[in-house]
Image (tube, chains in turn yellow, orange):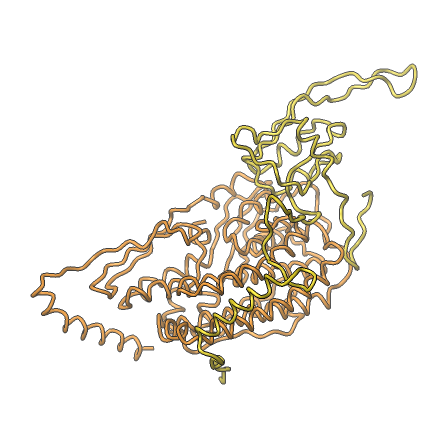
Length: 175
Length: 390
C-alpha cells in the first residue's frame, strides 16, 4: 500500500520553530482592532463569559420546592441535604379548608462534594433548581462551600434564560 | 518481524559481551530506576520500574494502580443515570467518548435506539472529544521530546474544541450529556456555524503540526525506528487504536462494527502505517485528527431534524440480561460489559479501557532501548493514567 511520505522539512527545524515563535509574538502585540491580541485573558481584570449552558453553580427557587427529595436521592454522591415540615397554608378560595403544604427548612448543597453532573437540576419536577454559569465562589475554608438555601437563592439572579435551539430541533413542550 | 526482534537481540548481546569484560574490571553493577510515580508533567501517577545496565534497559515493568478509584465497584451502588457521571472521569481528556459505550450497552439491554438526530450529535461530540484528546497528545509529545512551541499551539486550538463542548453540553471536561434513549438537550443556536469555523482552524493546526513537528529533523531522529512493535506482537498484547494501526493492522471499530452511531453515513478513511515505530504511532494520530474534523463537517451538513430523545420511562429500570458494547475511543477500544438484574442500577460492570491493554506492551518494547528513548516510546504509546487505573 502506497502511503504518503511525511513532508520534507522546508526550513531547518530550529529556524522553523523560531519563525513560529516570532510570528506568534507579532500576532500578540498587534492591536485587537486588526485581529491580533493574546489568546490569554488577564483574569481578575478581564473575565471570560462562559456559555449559557455552562454548569457553574446551582441556584434554588425556594417557592417552587415541595421537599419531594428527588434531587437528594438522585445525586450520585449525595451532597444535597434537605429537611422540611408540613404546614398549613391559607385556603385558595374564601371559606375553604386550609391547604397542607411542605415547607422547606433546610436545603444545603455541598459544593466541595458536588460533581457538577446536573442530574438534580434535570430530575426536579417543579423547576426549583437551575444552573447558573457563575463560577466565582471559591472559599478559603472548605466548610464554607456548603451553600444553604438563602445563598442558593441568591444565585437565582445570575440564571440566564435557556438558549434557543439549533435549526431542526424539536420544540419542548411546556417550557 | 523476527528480523527486527532478532537484530535487536543480537545487537544487545553483542553490546553486553563487549561491556562484560570492562564491567568485571570496574566492578560495575546494574541499577534499578523508578520512573514515576509522580512527575509534575504527568496528570496522574504511573510508576515504571526499569533495570538498567549503563544506558540500556534490561528489564522494565509498569506498576499501575496508584490512581485506582474503583469505578467498577462504585457503579454497583448507583442507578443507571448516575453511572455516566462516574465514567466520565475514566479518560478525562475524551470524556464524552466514555459515556457512549455504556449508554449503548444499556440501550441494547432495554431494546431501544436513539433517534437519528441524537445519533448524529453523539457521533459529532464523540469525534470532538477525540480531537480534544489527540490534540493534547500532539502538544504533549513535543514537550516530552524537548520542543516547547507545539504545546502552546495545541492548548490554544484545543481550547476552541473545549469551548464548543461546553457550549453544547455545559461541561468542558465532564459533559455528562448522554442519556439512555438519546441526549439531554439539543444543540444551542449558532453552534453548527461555530463548529465549522473551528474545524477549519483545526485543519490548519494539523498542517502546522505536520510541518513544524513532524517535519522536524530532530523529532524524526528521536522517533523513527524507535520502539518498533511488529503487528504480531501488537495483536498478542491486545493493543488497540492508533497503536495497533501504526503496526499495519487495519482495524477500527468505528468502521468494523455496526452500532447506532452515524459513522456509516460519512466518507472517511482508516489510516494505517507499516512501520510500527514511535513515529508511525504519532503520525497515525495526526491523520486521525484530520479525519475527525472531516467526519464532524460531514455530519453537521447532514444533520437530520427531529427529536433527540426516544420515549423512555421516567424511572429507568433496565431488564435482566448482559450486554457488551465497545467503541473506538481516542485511546483505543473501550468497552463495557453490563450485567443487569432488572434493578435501577447495574449488577456488575466490567470496564475494558484501552490504556490498560496498551501499556501491557511496555515490558516488551522497552527491553534493550536507551534511557532517553524510554520517554519517547512512552509518549508515543499515549496512555491516560485515569484510563489505566479507572
